[in-house]
Length: 191
Image (tube, rainbow, N blue to C red):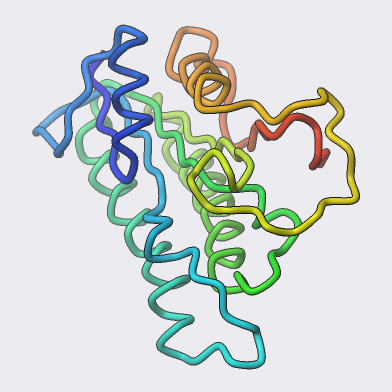
């Protein structure tokens, strides 16, 4: 299966090690897209009271535009044979984030984008889902003491995240669309 991974070299490398053919750019056709937001641009902490329109656009709206473009490109490549779309978005969209309001908004927007793609493109065999890891797995320092204990006693690392993505890209992923799988060790438990 040819997978386009954008936004994370580490996830692309790990999927390559898991046996997927990984393309760094968009070929004319491909079977799967794994999109990761540019966290170096989006995860800049700014107090909400000091967030400017430029901050909002660069750290929120731009993240959504990038994902929309990626999904539209994937649809064009997959609409005849079906395929898989996996949007990686941190759990910050589910719980909010101190100093990261634009990115939290964008993260929740990515979940909505996946649901819209799932509804509209499911009839042509395209599944669309989100995988939500903790901030740390995406390289965003989580410097806030979390009062919620980890149900698993640990935060799954890159290997755990890639295992869930691999499941969604495989045959079992054919039965799952429009959902968010949370991969954070049990901190966030949402329906």
